[in-house]
Image (cartoon, rainbow, N blue to C red; front, side, top):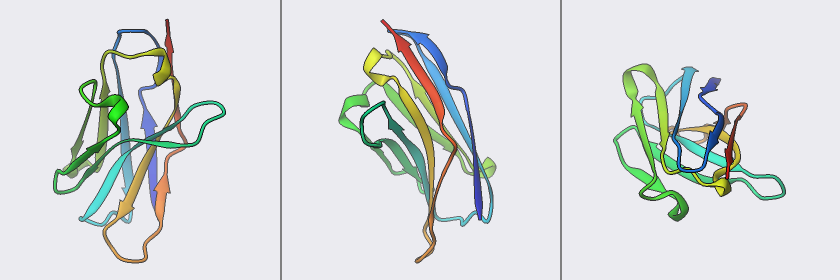
Length: 118
C-alpha cells in the first residue's frame, strides 16, 4: 500500500503562482513514476505532468513553459510549481504514483482544489 498526501492548493488570481506538494509513504519502490493529473468540473481527468525516479518528465501541452515538476526521491515527495496561472487551470489536482514493479497498482491522492480567478 502507498499513501499520498497532497498540499498547496488554493485560490489564486490569473497570472499568479502556486506550488503543490505530494508526499508518498508506505511500500515505495525505488523505481517509480510520480506526478499530477487534474479534473475540472464536467471534464475527464487529464495528465498535467509526471516525473520518473530517474528524472524523465512529461508535460501536457497546455502547461508546458508554465508548470514545472520536480521531486525529492529521498523524501518520496513530488512538487508542481505552477506559474502564469490561467482560469482554465482551475481543477482538482490529484497526485499519482505508479511503481516500476510489474503488476503493482496505481495510487491516487485525495485531490487538492486549485481555483484561478480572472
